[in-house]
Length: 296
Image (cartoon, rainbow, N blue to C red; front, side, top):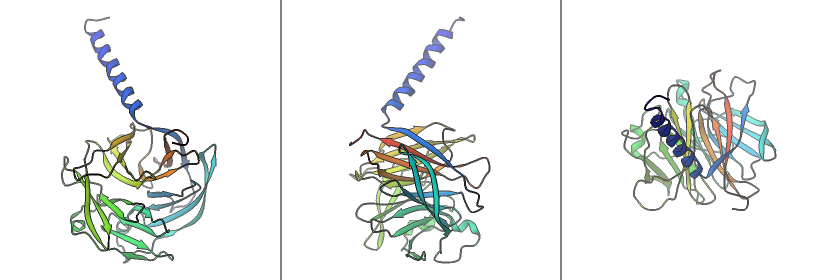
């Protein structure tokens, strides 16, 4: 062995052990991944996701302004197949030309079943009627200044029926992300979330525990990496949260939609869907991570 090789080897082993320790400290573990293929030119580009409480059905929205509903077939708890029950365009509150302005990114479904979507091309949040017609909610003054391709990426609703939305990018690389809350007919700034180098928010949901879960994505020019953080909504300081899991580059596709629910064993599940950007080199992937032991 050459001089200095043992030192470099020790340093490399230390880094590996440190990385393993960090992963061991993250409470969520990968349960399964399902690649979803459908022979339909409209299929793909999914950025928002909601899974029913029993894990047996889903709703997804695409960045071309379409909404899909489907029934989930499971084997030993993992997704084995999905049957589409409804698939069609969302009736926006006004014509969207060019088509990029139909970019529905966030999806939230209230406890009573009312559906809300957020748009990135036109920074707004819409409430959908039972017939799919959209009504625009009042804007927050800050919405007008958001970048067109980094606007209202995240949409979630808490147990009290209050909506939360946030942009994909903050005002600066080291500035926290604002999170706006819609209550009593208006948006207010509810809290801020710290920004971490290499990650941007793309999806969010509330769990049964009342915590806010944020899906974040990183891209290094070769592939995507994924992270979920959990936030207890207390205090007014920017929240850093706890990392639930961090998936390295190329483990998953471009995960953008997140749904948090509790399975039959009492565990919290994080179900995510990827936006394939309608590209052949990418895929529509549904990934599920699980937190906790049975009955926890």
